[in-house]
Length: 120
Image 1 (cartoon, rainbow, N blue to C red):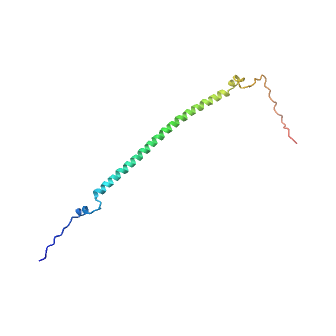
Image 2: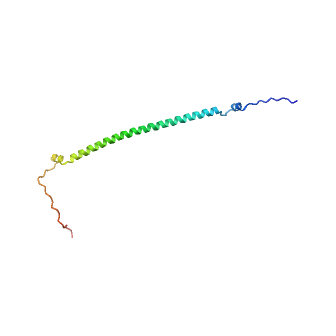
Image 3: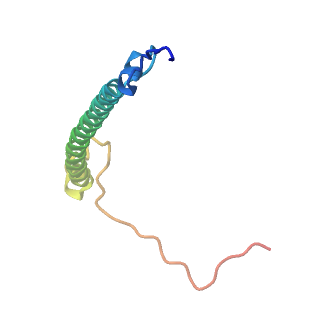
């Protein structure tokens, strides 16, 4: 007769848990979940920053367009004021202030003839 030797057999599922330094599927799925959550959070903050930046630029553009309209109105007012100041009526009213002398008689130069003098 042969002596009986008892063997201790550890099932595979328990063997994987018993190993030190191994990563279980639960640990992997939890790590992957945390990475996904952090990635989604980072992309959300980036998106919100871009939306806020775009909204800020929109308000800047609106403010600049309003300023442009004000400048165009001011330009029109200045053009009208310049035309009024250049008008003959305004100049006639301001003859003494402009140190101009009123003339009673206008003398025109005669038109040149058909010939032009040339130097020899």
